[in-house]
Length: 393
Image (cartoon, rainbow, N blue to C red; front, side):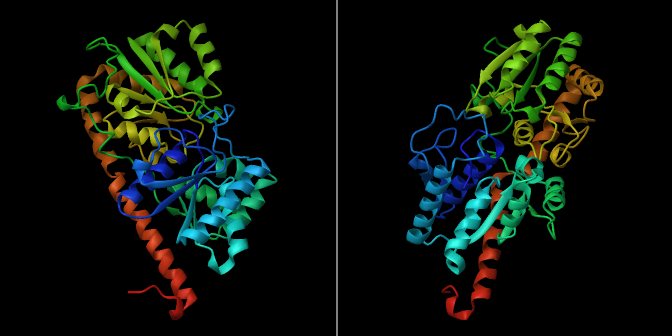
């Protein structure tokens, strides 16, 4: 189960579905509407939607976590039907709201016949909803109904344990990247890294930002950092994504006279074709449980400039694969960026190190960790049920 927006939790969930299906598992995906991006039968995943027709008010960059009752009940009905008909071994959700409540309801209805329940916490399901006066206690109770709980970084695991009062932190399984798609450019790639901006080789520094443009991404700070970099060197900013903060961001860029140096690319499914052409990924988030964009940039050999918050230090190695600045210390961020972008030798060294670091988070390895988790949980369930219910050899 996952949301349908373009956020990191959705991309991890759908990527996991596709890779598990490729490995021969039978996979069903439960969502409110069709997930953002390409989705077809060729993926080998059976898609179940609570709403067959996409609501134009559900912008793909916005996370609609609080569902109307009729949507919740519809997906619950679908879940129960598929579990009964298909005999699902596992029900795994990515992002707790509202899926933790759906999983708890499945367990309540099916009791011992319920599939193994697994949850993965991704970000604001802990930092925002976990601290909510009403939802926090409900979520805490729902998480205790799970057979397995994971999250994407040590930092977020400790936060979840603190916020929900867990006896032990969730197991850490980091986000992953498809290294066959996200990779440094080569002579054989043709248009990969297409944006030398269709103008041939440019001496301008190409800075990229990728996000859902929500308040947590702290876009005003991102803009200020770019503006100060632009005052010192010739640079342009590529913006991939869309969301509720876009209009305010455009106003700041226009007021500072740098809008002409910004390329607004909107929501794109081919981020892997754009990233290799960039020189630096710029993030300024107030919090990141992991930051999938940083990992994908590094896999393409793009260094990362980001704040030292949340799980980012577990992804970006400071002064080796990028720079982690103290939150709100724009002066340090600008200084590191300008020095790196003016030093071609250091930039090449950091590009190489970034790609090497990202290889540790490759899809092949991380999805195998999920498979091991599933196997261990299923074995534990069978032991609890006793020999009469054991799986055949």
